[in-house]
Image (cartoon, rainbow over all chains, first blue to last red; front, side, top):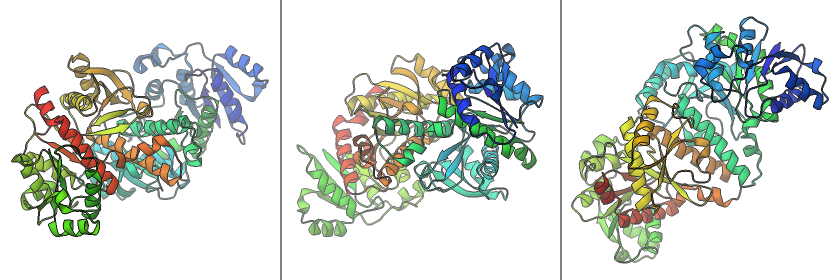
Length: 312
Length: 312
C-alpha cells in the first residue's frame, strides 16, 4: 500500500513532519511505502541531517503551500501544486491508497469534495476520533468538527459510520452506539438530538444503547461509539486536551492521563469520503505525526472507505 | 435575610440535606436565618440525632415530595404542598429572600414561572455555574442546561446576565465575556453562534473578548464569563465532573483537581428570574449542600435578581 504524507502541513512543518515520517517507517510492514509530498529540497536536507537514506521513501515535489489561514473553499483551486492538492489528485488517480496531513482541515475536506468525492448515500462526512477510556479500551467520537449543526438523519448516520469504523479499524464486534445528550431520558436535548434518538431507537442496523451523558465519557466503556454534532464533539475533544494539559502543568504522573495525550492517537479519519484520509492536529510534533501515519496505515489496511461504501 | 432550603430534594434527602444545613449555620452572619422546608418529623428526628437545637432554624412543614422522575410541568400544580412549591410561594409572598434545592431542576424552573416569574426583558433565564481556573480564579459558565437550543439574542443576553453575576456575586470589575466556539475566527461555529458573535462584537454593554475554544477553559483565566447554549454548557460541566472523578479514581493528589470538585461550589443560580434561587446537583451530600446554602447567602446578599432587574 502507498501512504501519502503531506510534509508541508502543520505548525511544525516541514521538519517535525519529516522526523515523524522517519520514526513511523520502523513500524511499516510488507510492501507498504511512505510517499513524502512537499518541498523536495527541504525533505532531502532534513533526511541528510538525520542521516536517513532518501530511497526509503518516495518523494513527490510540490511548489505551493496551503497556510492555516488560507480560505479552504478557494485555496484548493488556487494552489493546485500544493501538497494537499497533489495528495488528493494522487488518491483520485490511484497512485496513493491513503493520505494524511496535519495541515488546514478545511482544505483537506474541500480537497475531498473536488477529487475523490463523498460516498453516494453518505449525507455528511465526519471527523471520527478515537479517545481512551480508563478500562484500557477506546471509544470512537464523531463528529468532532466538520458539521457544527447536524440534522437528525445526519446524527443517525454517524451512528452507522462510527460503527463501521469501530468494527473494521478497532476490531470491535457489534459495536455499541450511544447518543451524547444532557440527560439519560428520551425527552432530553435539542429537537435534533431528540429526533435522532427516535431514528436510532427504531433502527435494526446499529447496536443503539440510548443516551450517554458527558460525565460517563472516558470512564469504563459504556458505548464503543459516541455520536454528537461537530460543535459538541469538538468541545469534548478539546476539553480532553485541556485536562490533559492541566495534568501536565500540575506535574502529575498517571498512566491513564498519559494515554489521554492526543499525540498517542495522532489523527482523525474523514469518514464518508471515497478515500482513506486522516487529518492530524495542527500542533502535531514528531510523535503525533508518527502516530498519524501509522493510524493512516490502519485505516488503509482496513480499507475503511470501501467498507463504508459497501454498507451505505 | 431568610434563606429557604428544600430538605426533601436530592438523592440523599432528607438526612444529608439536614447535615449540610447544620454545617452551613457556622458561617451564617448577622440576622440571616435558615428556613428548613420539608417533613417536620424527619427534620426534628435528624436534628435530635445530631444533638442540634431546632430553634436555630425555622422549620416549615410540607406533606408532599417531588421526585426526580416527576414531570416538571405538571408536578408543580399537582404537589402544591411540596417543599419546592412552598419555597416558591414563600419567595413570592416575601417571607423568603432566597431559596435553594438539590431536587428536580425542571420543577425548580417551572416553579419560578408559576410564582415569581421571569424578569421582564429577560428572554430566557439560565443556569450560571462557577468553575475553577488553574490561576486560582473562577469563571462563570452559562447556560449549563436550561436552554439546550439558543437563538443568537439569547446567547447575547447571557453575556449580560453572566457579567452581572460575575460583577456582583464574584466581585469582578468589568468582567470579560468570551463566546465558547470551535475556533478563534469569527467565521467559526453554528449559524446561531456566528450571529451571537456579531451582536456581542457590536455591543458596548459588555466587555466582549471574542471566541474561546474549549482547550482554553479551566486554564489561566481568559474570560470571566463564558457563554454557550445549555446543551454545550451541560457537556462542559459534566466533563469537568468526569475528569475530576477520574482524578479521584486514579488516586491522584492535586490542589487544582481538588478545587474542581463540584461539592466546593454547591449550587448554580437560576439567573433571570424575579428571585434569588440556587439549584444544587442531585447527588449533593453534606458538604455540597452546605456550599449550596452558603452560595445562596452570597447571591441573596448581592441581591442578584434585583441587580439584573435594574440592568435589563
